[in-house]
Image (cartoon, rainbow, N blue to C red; front, top):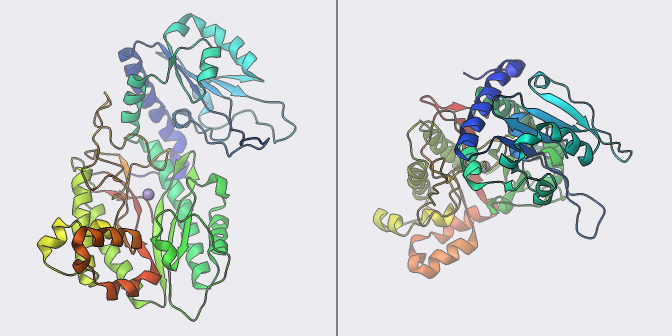
Amino acid sequence: MLTPLSSLSILYPKHLQRLASIAEKAMAKQQCDSILIHSGAPKLAFLDDYHHPYKANPHFTWWLPITQSPHCYLLIQTDQKPVLFYHLADDFWHVPPQPPKGFWCDYFDIYWCRDLAQVKREIKRYSHTSEHRAWIGEDIGLACQLGIHKVNPEGLMHQLHFARAIKSQYEIACLTQANDMAFAGHQAANQAFMAGKSELDTAFAYLSAVQQDSMQMPYRNIVAFGHHSAILHYQHYDHRPQDMSQPQSFLIDAGATFNGYGADVTRCHSRGSGLYQDLINAMTQAQAKLCAQANPGISFVDLHQQMHHLVLEILITFNLVQGSKDELLTSHISSAFFPHGLGHLLGLQVHDVGGWQQDELGTMLAPPTPHEFLRCTKTLQENMVITIEPGLYIIDSLLEKWKSLGFAHLLNTHTIGHLRPLGGVRIEDNIVVAQAPVKISK
Ligand SMILES: [Mn+2]
């Protein structure tokens, strides 16, 4: 069962035990006796002295909830307490990092280091194992400086990535908290939209309610009115206020982060359009059917195919397509309206790693044609956390493609024309896979 935020400190030791056992098994198999994980470092913009936003190495954040401390190192050894080399820079440009504190600290040996030289000195205490040490991190040069040559070894990464798909109760609690935060934002954004605010002001209302800035979002929030909602990763925020004399549609795909874990939720709202509200209702019903099937043993590819059948039913009901059911199926006409995948793994990364990975050896299964954008081809297992996000959109370039393939007669241009200014609809929730799947988004 899901556990409230106050229980994180109770859930964490078991999470850590699980990670230790995963790491020990992986190290034994890969002939390593230790792993040094780098938290990462912010990168400079080209020809500039300004850094891009820092994003911690997810393998680091998997072990401990430090998301804003670059230049840290975590040493994992068999049968030993993990060792954290924590960077305490003397930095007058920024708020200097504070000594770590929190429920997790007791489970680590912690060294406070001023710089890499000190890390090197401290790590020498453990150097007798260094030739069998693996490095997990982006900076290969740094690994070399520390005398480590097994850099992100493929076999090790496959084992860890396979394990990361299944979440501990601690991780599920973090994901649930991120979702609770996102919910406040979704409510505020809907109010702003209904009041006639611009996309930009609606995006601000979202962040304000979540109490996180845009850099803390797990991905760039999509705040799309009207035909913008048909642009799958619409990346602008229009500053013009709405024309309140016209019906309007609103698609918001927005998250929040907690301890490095992200929420990824999409909602749609209608102001004055019966057609759009009907579409929202139909998609919400179809989505609920799919969520209810997120059971262990279910193939995500099969669920994705089933979703195409449900989307096709909606296309027929709304008279957007016409013709024989056979031809509608064989033409894959639903892909002209729904080009992306049913969903993806969710965790420390929004599109969590390993969605195509079938085993710990790293066997990959690409999705079948024409579903190349499906990000997960796994058989679902208990405590995987996934998104379920069916939708449909009027995307003219795709409709043109199907027309050029000889399927123009299947498309009802009249009704498509009605929907075009309203863009598209998508409903997305975050689901814990179980016999009775748990929806953690509200
Ligand atoms: Mn998503």
